[in-house]
Each structure stands twice: as C-alpha cells, then as structure tokens.
Length: 324
Image (cartoon, rainbow, N blue to C red; front, side, top):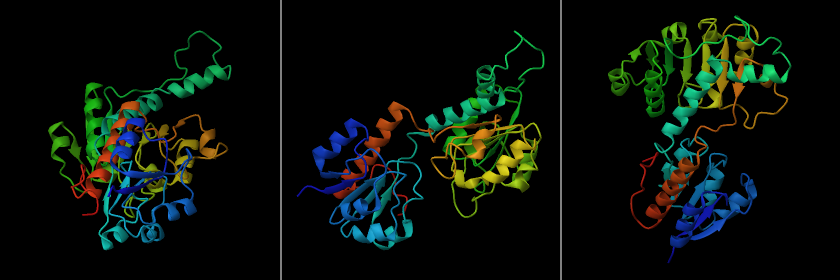
C-alpha cells in the first residue's frame, strides 16, 4: 500500500508536490492560506505522514488525532509550532529543513544591516515626503555602513557564521559574539572573539540577533539590554519575533537610545498595518522573508518531501530528526 499523507497547503513548489504525489496518496488542504483548525484535526486522521508549515499549530490534540502518524515534516527551519515532547512519547519522527536556507537568510541579514545603517529606506521615504529640497547637503541623511565597524553577534550558529563571512568581505574591523555553546570553532577561525553578552552589545556598532526562541531567549532584547548599547548602535533581528520586547524596542528607537533597527520577524505575524512600530522612520520591517528565494523554496520543498517519503517507506529521513 502507498503511504497516505496530509499536506496543509497546495502552494508548495510544484516539483516537490509532484514528487510527493508520485510516491504517496496525498490529501491536500485546498486553500493558499494557513489550514484552519478543524480541517487539520480531520485531515491527519489515519494518515502516515503530515507535511506542514511554520504557520500550522501541531499540538497534542492534532498529534492525538493523527493516530497512525509516523512523521511530521515541517517545510521550515523552525519547529516551535510542533509539540516535540508529545511526538517523542508517540515515537513520531519530526523533521525540518535546515541548512538549505542559511545563505539566503544570511544575505537578507547583511542587506538589512546595510539598509538600516545607511538609512536606505529612510532616504527613499524622504523623497516621497518631499524632503529633498537641495540637490546635496553635507550633513543630510547621514548613516554608517559596515566597513570598519564592530559587529556583535548574539547566537553563532550556521546562519550567523554565514553572515560573518559576508561581513568580513565588507571589511569590518572586528567581530564579537555571544553563544552559550562557545567556543564556536568555525567563527573563531574567522577571527570572531567570544565575549559575555553585555560586552558584545555594549561594544558593537551593529548587533545581529540569530538565536533560537526558547524560554531562555524570550524577550532577551529588552530595555535593560537596549540601554547597554551605544546610542549609534544598529540592531538587526532575523531570528524570531519573540526574542524581542517590541514595546522596549519602540521606546529605544523613539527616544534615541539606539540609532536604528531592522527586523524580519515580529509578534504577531503579520504585524497590523497600524502598529506603532511602523510609524518609526529609523526601523525597517520586512514580512519574514529570510528564505524567500525561488531556489531556496524549491530546495526546502524537496527536502521536506524526501523526509516524508523516506520515513513512511521505512528509511531514515534525509535531514536529521529534531526529536530523536
């Protein structure tokens, strides 16, 4: 018998979807938006596998409804939307799609650092607002780029190491990092120096946050940490919205505690269009597009599908299970 799979979206890359349909009997939620709760609870019943997205809450009730599940594969790097402990109890393999998007997220992170540092979005807005009165002014819209700067990393995993390589190419002066798993040998071989968290944020011109979201990191970037930063500091977050206290970030930017920031993640997502963060000219907000490249999405789709096919046919997953 062919494995039976429930897929929570129809708009995964076409090539990956066709590969899944060739190997399995697939039930697809038909709408191009996150699956509703009732459909998910009904859809997993009797299925061998669930292929889900970051936007799907796969909690104990969903896992219980999936009475025959062998694998829950998420087409994302993050897996905090899945009840990992419950899957362990039921011996259900959980996989994600690591590594394939690291360079993509690193490119966006570096781009946001440059854009916020050099005030690129602010400058574009100035033109739209009719503020470009003289052809040139010596002190107007001055920013500061990455060259000759000190870059501080909070979290030094694969993506941060990829950002570091790009920063070195842009001729930064030095790189500092904080990571609870230090020493991180690949980063130190590139010249990064480990320091305690307060020293990293206190000395850096750019603070780049690339940590996992957990109880330890939840709202770690708050008033206390922002006030330790230089007034000229630029804060970048492309990890998870929950690691930042957004009220404290707003106040830090509004009151000149730090110079600028750029975030690709927020709470909630999507951020309401009338949210007060969006009133700040010294903040860039992008809609969680870290891995939004055509080639990366195709690779993520194939990896998730391969994991599903492998596990439901008795083989090991292509990427390492996150709960085994």
